[in-house]
Every structure is written in C-alpha cells, then in structure tokens.
Image 1 (tube, rainbow, N blue to C red):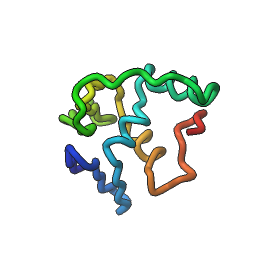
Image 2: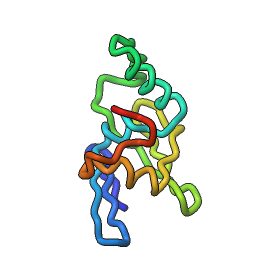
Image 3: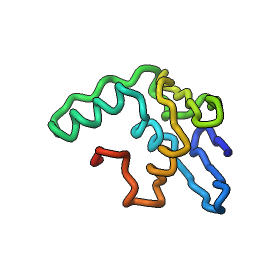
Image 4: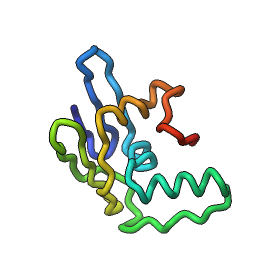
Length: 108
C-alpha cells in the first residue's frame, strides 16, 4: 500500500493486481453513513444541494491513512472527513480499473 497524499492510493494485491485510487475518487465513494446517504439522495434527486466543503480552497488531499485491524483502513482527508472505514473487500469492489464493480446497491 502506498499513499501519495496529493494524488492516489496504490494497493498491490496478493494476487498480483495493482489498484490505483485517486484521492477525490476515494472521498466521493467514502463508505461512511453520511456519504452513502448523500449518494442515495443524489441518485433520487439530481438537484440535490451538496454540502459545502470545509477547509480551504486548496485541492483535496489525503492527510494520512491508518490501519484498522487487519480488515480496513481509515483515510483522513483535507476537508476534515475521516469517518469511513475502507475494508479490503470494499476497495476491491470500487477499483476504478474495474468499471463493472460498484458498491453493493449503489449506482453512481
């Protein structure tokens, strides 16, 4: 696992696959309850008002990553978001190089 805070998270899987997740993509697909509800609302109503981004006018970055046991990671984003736990299974599901893989029950 390699985090380039202003670019992407790269994961080298044990089966040889390499997944590269842009920081903005990870933030958009955060598995937090708040982010899931926002994605559902946006799917129902395309005119949904997005919450204002907290922080500065600087581009979104990842400020850090922490292992949660052996099953997940938590990413701290520059906008203050850090409540989503990205399980290894979820990260495989949202691999941007596998467009047919979407979060279960969500069309984005």
